[in-house]
Amino acid sequence: MTPQTPASERIHIALLGRTNAGKSTLLNCLAGQDVAIVSERAGTTTDPVQKSMEFPGLGAAVIIDTPGLDDNTALGKERMARTAKMLDKTDIAIVLITNDNIATELGIIQECRIREIPVVVAINQIDRVENREALIAKVKAATKVDVVAISATTGEGIESLREAVVRCRPTEERLITEGFCKAGDRVLLVMPQDKSAPKGRLIQPQVQTIRELLDRGCVPICCTPDRMAEALASLQTPLELIITDSQAFNEVYQLKPEASTLTSFSILFARYKGDIALFTEGVKALKNITESSRILIAEACTHTPQNEDIGRVKLPRILRKRFGEGLHIDIVGGADYPDDLTPYDLVIHCGACMFNRKHVLSRVERARQQGVAITNYGVILAALTGILDRVRTQ
Ligand SMILES: Nc1nc2c(ncn2[C@@H]2O[C@H](COP(=O)(O)OP(=O)(O)OP(=O)(O)O)[C@@H](O)[C@H]2O)c(=O)[nH]1
Ligand SMILES: [Mg+2]
Image: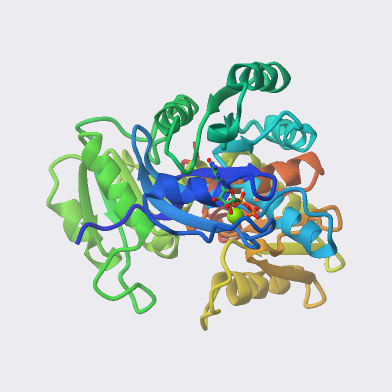
């Protein structure tokens, strides 16, 4: 079985528009199967529906079908808030329109513009429209974005829609190890496979890093911390780069040849997924933390906490030991990340292995705009254990 691309590495495309615009019909049309429920009753979709698929010309994608934007009931408002949250992870938005009454849609297009999300406007149900040219011209003039006319039921215009979406794809290709190594470099990956590691497989950051190093023409060499000395002894010249799991940092640091650069998976992923400069800046807030400070620990997913869970157990313990037992720490998971971060002196986000980059950056941006220091697990643990000054971060 071919392993699936994880959702965090897929381009997220949101379908937005009013109730009955045909969002769910379009999702089914793009997926080539009935994924979402369709009906002529307005407000059919009540929760966002996500479908992973291969999007021709774009690659691995997730299409997000959202509840309609024009429901004024209290429940409808809650749904709209949930749709707005979807924008946090949206890389490309398709806004569906069915006529020239588009004030609501202009609002959402503007919201996308603020968030720098590229938008394609799809005039759906074009099979029902008599004067097509006039409607297209009007919508183009009002929205000033790429406009395509489609029918999600007949399939008309779907190819043009796909092409328009492909034109919006992010052009920069990000690398985990960018600037840390080049083709031909030998890279040692130190990866403890202890009890907390999943049985029979490597965790996602390790797999992704190894694959990228192979693609880049580097020579990845893997070992557990207890075999690092043997790995080094088998080489005639010092390695160019060592990437270690943070847990093994001290052991690895002792053995590291002078000439080799040292970094950690958490640092590389903090950089790949988030904003490493802001995260390393964020840990400077530690010097102003006192027992009466407030800290927010934010987790991307709502997983079942494990015994030595970093966010719920380890990190609060280290922080309270250092700053006092009375330190106020709030822990939130999943969608509970607050809109208002100003009550906090520091936000510490998890590594967000389940989030796409856009999602992490939306959260980081919220903290930055509100002037609240933000960092992540990998960076703060490195700072608290004295590693941060001894590894390369950028
Ligand atoms: N003729 C025609 N009907 C369409 C088209 N797209 C959707 N419909 C119909 O419009 C109605 C609403 O479609 P949905 O896909 O449920 O609309 P939605 O935007 O998901 O609506 P909510 O979930 O309520 O927000 C259904 O009866 C569809 O069959 C189209 O391109 N042409
Ligand atoms: Mg729907």
